[in-house]
Every structure is written in structure tokens, then in C-alpha cells.
Length: 168
Image (cartoon, rainbow, N blue to C red):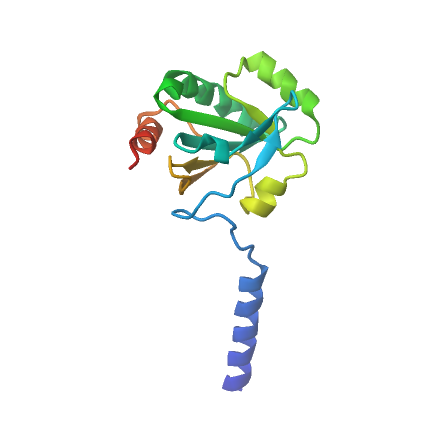
């Protein structure tokens, strides 16, 4: 009986572990490069940002917390862009129309690219949920994943970004 229960427990645990998605991106590992087009059709690559501190912000126009955090991220970008901060907004929307409208409405200063088929989001980065931001240091290494809505102007988050800029 004990052997049977043990066997069932091992099978159950294995099934649960196998059902969990393997994250494609981990902290302290290289950030996967990508090439995505912005709403004007221009290509943006992560590799092209090497030497700069990067915030990848995955979001969609239908995600209220995503849209709510964007103005603070835009302000942070405007303040720190001259110090080597790059923000790339990665919109997961199926079409560019609503994204263009939001860019205009919020007067976004940082580039927004489209990942309509979610290849970068799911396949390269192994992410789930929105918003999610990935902090990448000047060497292209993932420093942190921030899940959920963030107040980008809070002292705690500002310190994280300052540390990213300083290479810590």
C-alpha cells in the first residue's frame, strides 16, 4: 500500500512539474534578443540597446493596470533617458490601431513595438500576465522581473532604476 501511494505521489508531482512552463528568461541570464516593429514599421532590437540600461514593459491596451502605469514610466523615461535609460514598450495587442491611439493620447516618448503573435512574450521570455517589466543591464543581462502594476515614480522603484543605471 505504501509503495502504491508513493508511486502515485511521485507521478502526481512529476505531472505538476511538467505542467509548469519553463521560464525562458531568468534573472542573471542573458536577455533574449528580439527584433520587433514599432507602429510605424521601423525595426527595434534589444541588441541595438547594448551599453544602455533597458526596461522592457510588456502590456496591452485592454489591460487597465498596464495603461495606468504607463504615464509614470513615460515620466521616468523622460527624466533618465539622457543618463542611459531605454524603455521599450512591447504591446501585445492584435492590431496597431488601439496602440497608436494610446501612444498619441499619452504622448509617449519611448518606442512602442508590437508583439501581436506574442512570440517574444511567450516563446523568448516565457512570460504570463500583464503588465510585466524586465530590467536588463548595460551588458544585456536580466536583472529583475517586475510583475504587476508599478508606480514607476515611487522611491523604491526609482532606486531600482538608479541601481540599474549604475550597474548594480
